[in-house]
Image 1 (cartoon, one colour):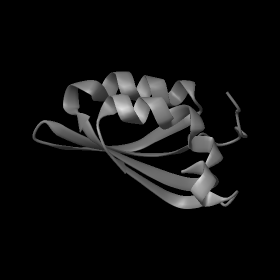
Image 2 (image 1 turned 30 degrees about the horizontal axis):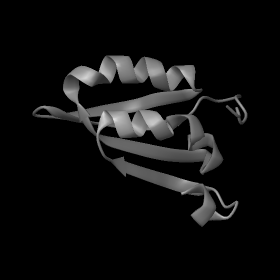
Image 3 (image 1 turned 60 degrees about the horizontal axis):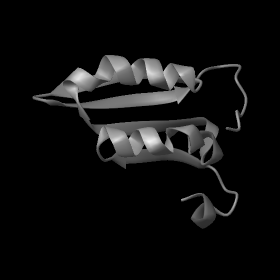
Image 4 (image 1 turned 180 degrees about the vertical axis):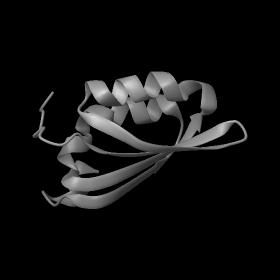
Length: 88
């Protein structure tokens, strides 16, 4: 994704895939999402949400809202205010 963006940052990112895939790309979100942008993560099982919220926080992201539907969830997230880019 980074190479296709060619340095541009997106305002909205939608990931509709399973937790292990999202976890593997989460450290690079700051490289593709604008500091004032939002991301929507779906494809997460309800029981994965608490652990995922902690993981997001460790990378400087904040879960703004969580929507549950049956076994599935969607997390809306944004960058924690005041934190810049963190390269890992």
